[in-house]
Image (spheres, rainbow, N blue to C red):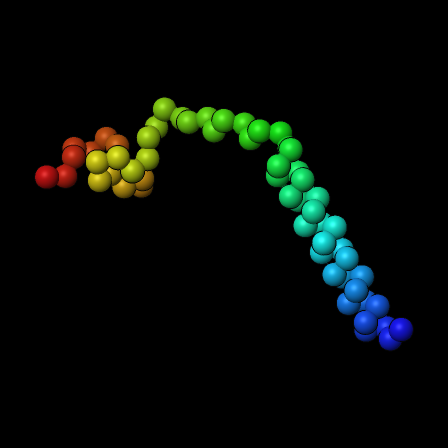
Length: 59
């Protein structure tokens, strides 16, 4: 067999193996941990994140 064909088949086999492992892990893997939210809420009521919090609100 030609070297290029052998390398191509090997790469295709690896892609299939890793794709199958990813699918199995996604299907039967652990549940993701819940996201912890901080007390500071971003982006509410038109506020910019970089806004000075001590300044009076813009009118």
